[in-house]
Image (cartoon, rainbow, N blue to C red; front, top):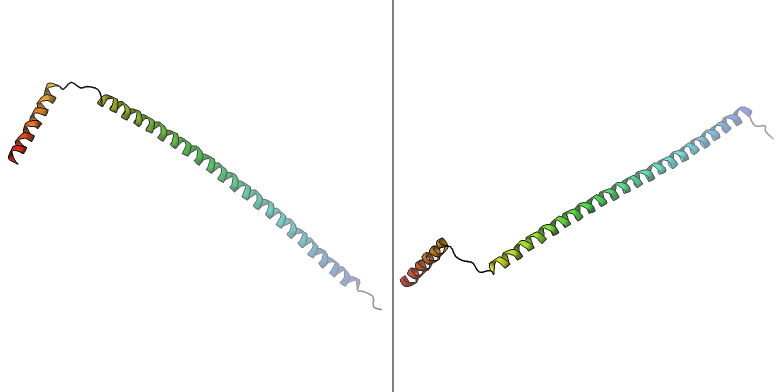
Length: 112
C-alpha cells in the first residue's frame, strides 16, 4: 500500500477549499442579485402604482371639470330656451328691418 504525499494532499485540500469558497461566494452573489432584483421589481411596481394613481386623479379631475362645464352649458341653453319662449317687444329698428325684409321678399315673389 502506498502512502499519500502530504504536500499533494495539502494542495488538493486547498484546491477543494478554494472551490468550496468560490461556490459559497457565487451563491452569496446570486442571493444578493436576487434580493436586488426583487427590490428593483418592487420599486418599479410602486412607481407604476403611483403613476396609475396620479393618472386616475387627473382623469377624475378632468371628468369633474367636463361635467361642471357641461352642466353650465346645459343651464345656459335651458335659460336661452326659457327666454326664447317669452314675449319680445320689437324695437323700432327691428320693426323696420322686418318690414324691409318683408318688402324685399314680396318684390322677389312678384318678379318670379
